[in-house]
Image (cartoon, rainbow, N blue to C red; front, side):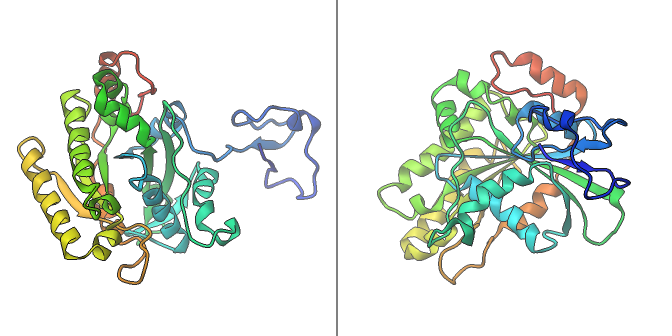
Length: 318
């Protein structure tokens, strides 16, 4: 917990003992006696903590799905790091309640980590998703009232793998019902390898079928497949590119009748080599995601919660 003085207090003022002694478990309320306010810890949120955002503002929720090492966290960090450089996708950064969380997952990609090559901290196995927040505003306007709230849900790959094997585990992923965008990542590195490509494709198909069979995708949810690590496909030669193209066709054939708006795209959040730029394909995807309206109503959200039993997540998103 960090305590900061109000604007009318001198910077050198010491922190009162009653503020120092409070445990670091939330936001301290400002008081007239102390003149100090508490700050959020800035780490990744859990579902119940998202209510302070979604209850106040219309919020776009983007859920990243995929097996272990499919690139979910790397995609998340690439979006955050693009905003560190300036406006991205027509939006400017206007704040975040999870800055510490972003910095933690970005650390292995920084010079300060001491690593010789950039890496990303893998999402830890958990029964809950981790949520990351961005507050954005249109780059073309200075009006703070035109802000847009975005929450990225990043569950562990193990959680999705369990959901593919068990209908009960799949129904426990109640955050899927609130998603405005469901982006299922397919590991391009595995698609480029003849020994692993068939399993990777079949697993991606089975994942979406499990979500559909369990009725976990909302009527307003836009579903996309992202072939991640597309630089691996490029380095894999013509054979890998042919299989990637076949993957697109097979996904469209499997789901076009159920999801007529399904889109399959390629991304390379952190490509190796000089063939592709950083965040290849990410900006185009990001623009499309934020163009999706958050149309869910309170009645629909409460109805969803009432139908899901033994849920791992609190799903009171509005």
